[in-house]
Figure (spheres, rainbow, N blue to C red):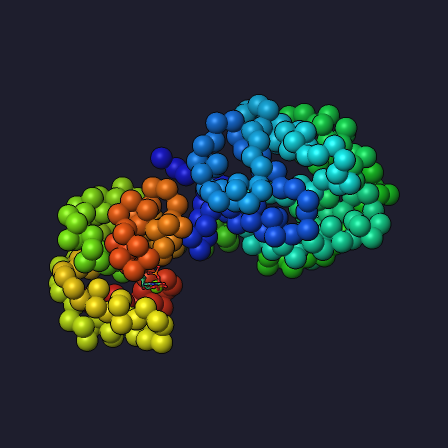
Length: 311
Ligand code: IDP
Ligand code: MG
């Protein structure tokens, strides 16, 4: 099954959760996320953000297009709000400071509609004064906030943001980057092997679309484990980690696939299983932050080094 776009992961977080998290960190008074009706995966991707105050509502009609999402979001905001900032999940590189720049310009009276501009071109997010609430609620079909912007040229003000942070995932170059074929190193750690989870984890890896192109079971000596984790030499957990990694057999493998390095990190979940998303290997099989079932390379250079370490 193809994952919906807002669940695409970057550095271990869905783009939805990245965007909502950045908004939560901004000076916006409330953050409302609009999902398609019944999008339970979207809800679970938000995870702890809901506890921190992000509110989830569902679009009014799944097939109508953008207007139904705008209406649901606007309706869910407090009627007393001075302004409504509309942002998209597929701009996952924007930061709280970017949203704050729009909010500050709006607060300073720059205009009734404040939009982001990238290298002089109008873009999202867009902040509408509360007086446009009814016009936003009147949008239909594929109409978005643009329609309202075009109606009020005299009210519009641009705030320049860094185009690198404003890029969205629709651009071909972003898709190209995220689709490139890669290899990554996987280690199934001693805790998982001892618990009889090797088969389950390998199945999980294959089900995630990663191809196992090389594989070996071996027992790391403490010296080899030290060498493998040398980057963590100064960390307080280093000695324990080395003892754990050399405590029993491991299975090392090379995984191949589109965007394999980041994809496998996503499939594994966060280092600490308590923070790992539901359905990830670490959530399912890890015991704690040390005995966390698996290893995956964290970048192209480390992948190359780590593959050469074993193969
Ligand atoms: P990663 O495996 O997700 O890349 P790293 O930060 O590179 O995480 O840490 C390497 C390994 O060291 C982890 O997978 C885990 O086994 C162990 N580790 C990381 N942080 C801690 C900690 O705080 N306590 C104990 N062990 C840790
Ligand atoms: Mg690491």
